[in-house]
Length: 445
Image (cartoon, rainbow, N blue to C red; front, side, top):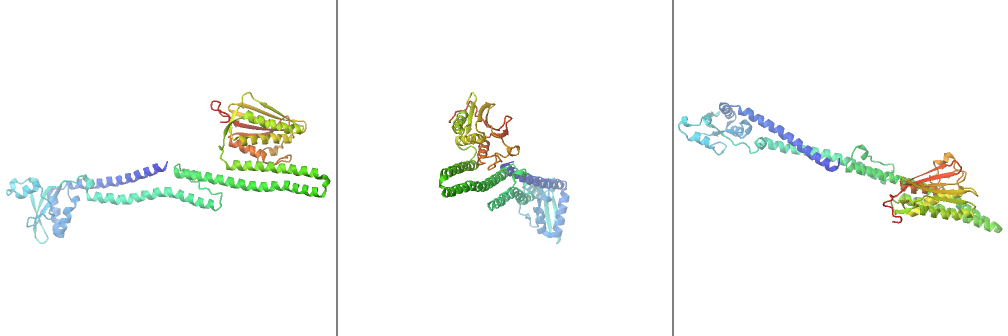
């Protein structure tokens, strides 16, 4: 329930409570009126006479002003010995008729004059007369007016307090969590949205938790990346340093040492490119710089480049594509790097005189790319970890980052990548990528 509905229902809850109080108060007033309507003229005069004897004229005035002492349509008009109405109220015509008619037989029976006597023996005249009821009935009485005012000042703060607590408590938790996160506590979570809240405050809590999880992942990954990179850089740098020292000591082996330095430099260059690719994948959104790419064309380019290297090493690359060119939506550079990493990894491990097989097929909206080598394969214990950054098994010769880049790129494209030892020998890497529907596919768009 959104904040609008929370506020809306809270408002109407206050209104219903107030209406309930008003209805109950009106019931009490009407019930009192019903009881007063059962009183006879003689009983009303008797009550007025008793009030006058006990409290005098001032007490009688207060008694006459209280409408709950009379039926809703009647009241008593009391006149002092000088003939003045003690509340200075306008005299209705029926009472005028009663007072001005000398012959008692001609007076209206309902408005007969009765006598009241004070405690000091002063005589007053009382006449029953009509009284216009309040315009709003029971709701127009002073009791109802004060009841509504008091109830409004009690109910509205109570409802506002409950509503504000339901809104401000989770917001305070978010503020406190923000402070803890800013102080470096990456495990901070508010879990407001996990407590059954489906309004905007709950969505704020859920988005905060997602942000905290993402920050923790980024910072943890970045820290781990720096740690691993610093470790991986030591080995080639140490080899370059040793080769340089040997070149100084043994000038006759200069060519060998320069070749060693060149290989280590290439290794550093490859490691740097892979690390930059990982950093780019961690920082960029999954849908950045996406184009519709002909996968056959991309893989064919990778296969051709690998063939040149394979021929120089006494190896071979076999490329087999399907009939129709499948189109995927991806970042061209990153997808090229992902495919190239798998092919180069296979080329690196396949023995002299063997081949690397690359095949591409499309089926049910998914492109299936397979790369297989004739190398020694990977121990079963390492198969689950070869896509982890800087994981290198006992038979690995690479940087330990290339396949991790491939896994990140394929995951960003909502695809899957897996590895297994082929029954014919060697490692088989399968990549599955979702295809762009044929009706909307426009390669290079």
